[in-house]
Amino acid sequence: MAGAAMDPAASDPRTREAATTLPVYGQLPFVPERAAGCDIITSDGRRILDLYGGHAVASLGYGHQRLTDAISKQSARLIFQSNAVALEVRARAAEKLVAIAPRELSRVFFVNSGAEANENALRMACVVTHRKKVLAITQGFHGRTAAAGAVTWNSRKWYGFPEKPFDVDFIPRDDCAAAKAMIDNDIAAVIVEPVQGVAGAYDLSHEFLTELRDCTRRHGVLLIADEVQSGMGRCGQYFAVQAHEISPDILTSAKALGGGIPCGAVLCTEDIAPHFGPGDLGTTFGGGPVAAAAINAVIESIDADGLLKNVREREAQIREQCRIGPVQKIQGMGLLLGLVCDRPAVEVRNALLEHDILTGTSADPDVLRILAPLVLEARHVDYLAHALESMAPTVNQERPR
Image (cartoon, rainbow, N blue to C red; front, top):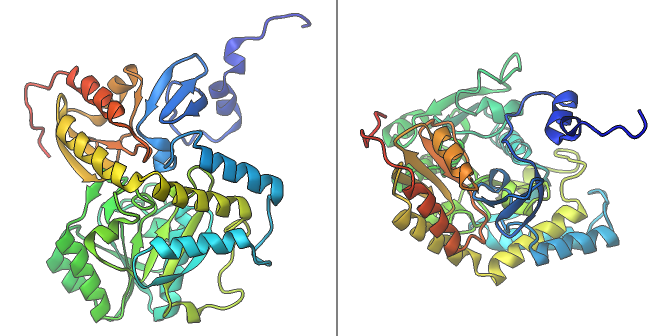
């Protein structure tokens, strides 16, 4: 009816999404309108400190000048061309990735997401080794596509496909004896997150990761490091395996790689590259010019802004100040941290949101995840510590685990 006031509920994006999209996501009770630095500004005027970064994606926070300029300029110059032509911006992105990667990783295949990166990494391992079995680690998460989901722990409840594309078994995490017993000449690959993100930012031990590298080399098995969540500076090195001085055969990257632009990458050794020629792998949007420009800007910003050092400093500050209130223990590495709580993590997440602080939960019901932008400042950690301190610990300080 002309002149009638619009029902506010009918214009709310939450109502409209609920009416038009599949109901597969639980959503938080606010609507972001814009963002700057580490802050989200909502449609009702709240300023929320974002310590979750859109599932670890917003590596440079929001509105970073170098990143937004690169995206804008590349969009105006050439918004897209496929891999059927060579692009200077793509060549530069590949060169920059190889330069920061663990030693021996000299080739790049660009894709669009972490799941796609892991999917192709697993395909490559089976092609190179001519073997049909893959080992993953208990509690690990690698994605929701066919192969990536097959190597994800406890995926049966949502996997959906009638069968897995290869045989899969799981090594108990941090069990060196089991790794030695299970890795043999029948295995194509072992895929591992150096820091298990979804599991609650659980950092695997140096001894275990070293055992995986030694055993895979001994049996001609490819070691795949899934650094979709832990990579691109999040752990205080460009990639978490570098803190352990380990070089895998294949490494996957996504999330923070483009700072908010969807992109992913598979990096591999020179020995693997000759097994693949025209048509063996492919993607329409992977390595597109805007994505490549974003990758270049992220790497340049991490270097120019000293963000690896900042990540290490903010980690030390969080460990020093934030084991307080409900937090009993802090695990993980860099700004991929798990705060082990004395109550369900969702309760702590909700209480922090009342203080205008956004954090994340995990597959471990007691672990709150911190996936803050790499530009996090000391004052932000001070504010988090103050909010945690206001939450009185439970009488029983240690929950059964």
